Image (cartoon, rainbow, N blue to C red; front, side):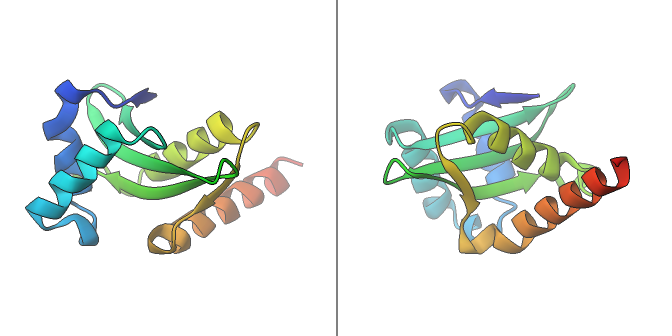
Length: 125
């Protein structure tokens, strides 16, 4: 289940985001978390099952696009479809108001999620 990030979840969110290559540097990671906490157009969500297993970040751009800019899953829970579930939930949450897309950094993963969704729909028919 996707839940909205809260300040008391800062350490787990930073831990998850640190798995992304561009967020390895602690100062950069702290800046990113601060941006999610203070910028009204940046939204961070966490994926919770029994524990928090993933993070997904969205930036609203020009009141038109919801840009997925961070997707990270705990390495011990990868390849279970959690990243795809997070992307699908973001699309469900934002599609009525914004065009959902992905930043260059996660574009390849986003396209894979979209391709998987189309295959599933075709297989259901």
